[in-house]
Length: 547
Ligand SMILES: Cc1ncc(C[n+]2csc(CCOP(=O)(O)OP(=O)(O)O)c2C)c(N)n1
Ligand SMILES: [Mg+2]
Image 1: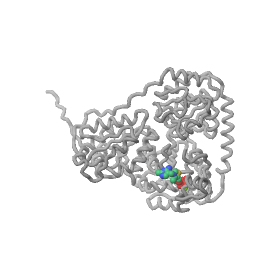
Image 2: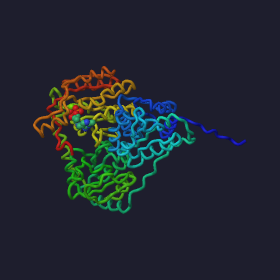
Image 3: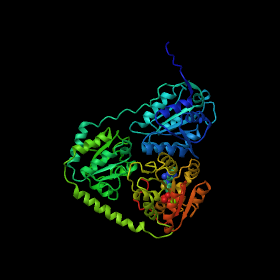
């Protein structure tokens, strides 16, 4: 007797959840809305955890945090209209960071489109400019294929966010469920061009003063082992920014940070891996005029080169780096160059000691980093959300493994921290997750301590509470001699806010109170905030604020 396979049917939300599950998704970050109910029902049925936040921006930033920590897709579901528009900053941030975030939107019913349904808004034109793909499901039946395509596109280099929305009528209706359960893998990345590679090998092999500058693209391409081998074996000093921090551990002999500006200026050859020549590299001006630039990445940068480059290596980054290591071996000795940079590195670090030991009350923000260094474990995940306080963190926090440092990235959106911390701790429950916060930054998403409490996620927040929007107040005063819109309430008890939300709070007014407060916060096993009152007179020494 011939077997007849009875086609199974499922509602649109279940079809969404099935495809997410097939691609290994285990968490859905969201804030409730009726347009999403069938997606929740589907997730519940297939065992995807639903993590609900207090604002859609946090659901978006949590999805991005998940993507950053796991290097897999981070998924959020935002309800129709205001839910989606509330998530827009997080999506723009994911776009700037190359984070493979999958945003699922509710949508007013297709059958009544244009007649003014509740929360009717055409998201796609808004989202198209900040995603790799933005589409509306035109029927229930096309949902599985649409999900597969979206996930593939998000993960293909250059990785980045995608958006799908689901009209209420389609997502609540039924269609045939595909029988296969395979998640479609992204296409494999081709190798870099041979001629360009030969040119790069020749340049690097002859370089007297080479440097490597690597950024987020290295991390997304899983190139850390090959980068480290290249730098260690060839004796090339390496500087890291963005998500590349930790890809070469801070105690590796090739790792440098303080000597960056002179190293990049004096380098004869700079290998620039997975980082655009944007404002962080002075639009290319961070390198010397004579520096020959070799660009490497999974794909060509989206912004045009601000200066001429000597070779361009676009393709599978690990094999590019390995080919460079093999090809450029046996070149000039770089010992003198490394020594010269090490001397500068040591001198600059010595210059920080005074601030690290500063005894003032309210505290110098640098003192917080001295105490934190003693409390943080080697694999702690540290997240920055704020202005000056986070600039100090960028300098002072050492990362020893990939994915240990998160900040908003070049889009610089305050309020990203709590969502990223929520996701990081859910992804890595056994590791410390420390959220460094400005008092200003707290205002954007501070209520998410409720989310952390409800979901039992013991993130430890450490706030530098200077009572001002420090990164704006000091520059405005320098420019105009006065400042407006730059003051907050001094000494505000944000720790009590966190206590009221069900977390652990501590107030620190003097340096000697800090260490026990930090230890107590980590030991509490609860979402915590250590509210450190810091000196508003201290401004981060920076050259430029906006460029
Ligand atoms: C969403 C958003 N709004 C405004 C800004 C501009 N901005 C950048 S840093 C900063 C000050 C942050 O103050 P705080 O978090 O208290 O840190 P501090 O500089 O005082 O250490 C502001 C307002 C921004 N980057 N993002
Ligand atoms: Mg502040």
